[in-house]
Image (cartoon, rainbow, N blue to C red; front, side):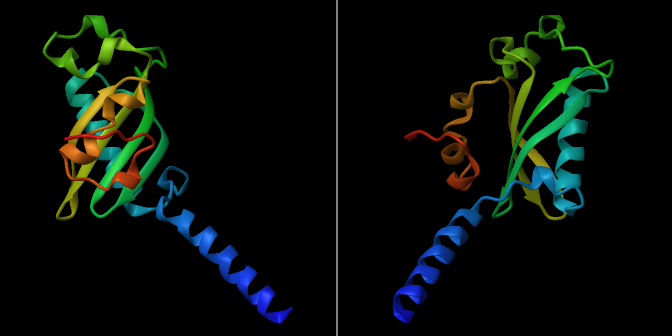
Length: 148
């Protein structure tokens, strides 16, 4: 009976620990990387939009010097941003202007973080190959696909 109990404890701990490879840093408000990543992406959006966007962080996963961010953006008045008002060159990152959800992949460069790629879309398939394109850990993403 003691061996069975020991085996069940080991099995349970391995199951719990295996889920820990993906930690959502969005809820850890005092995590230093969370603050730096959020500020870096907010500054990127501010520069792109020319307004002060409000960024709500929904999920943030960090692994091996990469960060995958999922959030929502609005203008500083709390209204949805009308993407049709932006320069067509800038609109390439606003996939069919679907909602206000944003996704970004960032990479650590020394002490700083750099935005590698970003989108405004609610479609998780749009970033399904970012792991392959940017050599990022596949575990960061909710949805991945076979990519060449």
